[in-house]
Image (cartoon, rainbow, N blue to C red; front, side):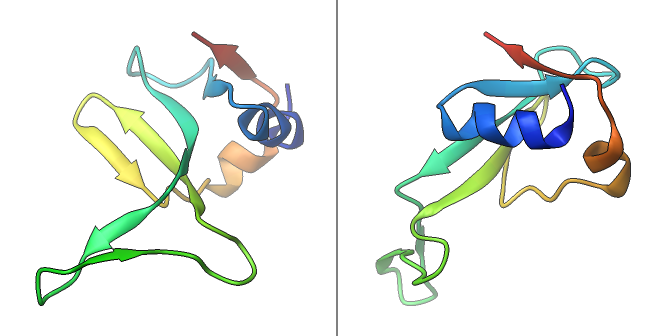
Length: 84
C-alpha cells in the first residue's frame, strides 16, 4: 500500500506498518479520546476544532509516541501493510 491507503486503513480502525521497518511489532494506529495532564495536575481533553480528538500513535519497542509524524520516506513509500 502507499501512504494514502495506509491513512484510509487507519481511519477504518486498522493498524499499519511499513514492511521495511527494522523493529518487529512496531506499528501506527489512530488514537482517539486524546487527553493529557497539565502542569496543575488537571486532565484536559483535546478537542481541536479542525482535527477533533484524535492523533496518530506509533507503538514501538520503547512504548507509544503520540502525535507521530511520518517522514518523507514514510510518505513516499509503497511498502505499507495492515498488521494484526
